[in-house]
Image (cartoon, rainbow, N blue to C red; front, side, top):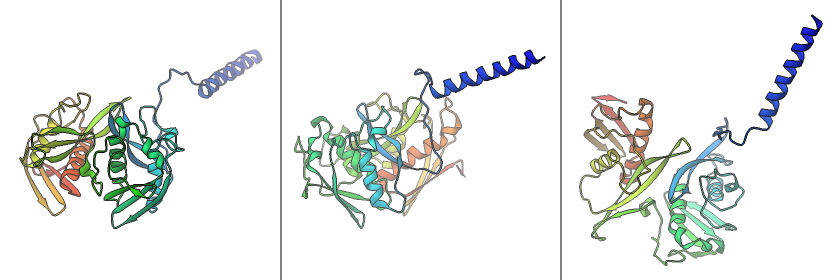
Length: 304
């Protein structure tokens, strides 16, 4: 009997030892999992994934009430080999050149002024426009930041460092991101900001695409039609809005838009759990393009 007990104790000990070793030294082939910690602030920024700027979440040390600290925190995440960007997922790349310092930041009535050190001018020529887009779209997600002016060592940055392409006096989302041009007349072109999804390591990330077009049709209808079809400019982007979904009617009052859809708002291939992703992509597209703050969805007269 004593031997049986002893044998069981030895087996239990060995089992516990093996489990401990596996836990402390996991196999390199084990898939990585995204860990979301409770009671930690997250913020969304736009980083480079291959040739597209993609939205991803980063841990923020700043509190929601300290907007200047939030701005500096985000800019650190956008800077190569900074304390924040060193911990980024390998799928994403920061674009502000290594060693770039923030000399000054001020925010007044929605206008954010950032004074960078001269190292920001070391940006690769092929990435200079993407860097500006990343800064604009990451920072204007913050409440209270509507437009941006960039300075280098106290001098306003009026053009891109290498191409010398002129920059607007004040940078807003109308500057565009992941730009696509479908124009034959630059004097009558308009911009539509559409939000698609991309699958990266089994996680879906938002990808904004700015389409510069001469299309003068109703913007709401054009946005819905674009999201119903696969984007021809990027085959790896997707929208979960059903191709047979019909926008029956819409109504805009002040900063709110009401959308009335047919029942076919989701493709049969996808779970209804994706309805929130569909609504978010449509809301972001309409918000950026039309400036609306609230989007309400109805199907057959019922709010969803």
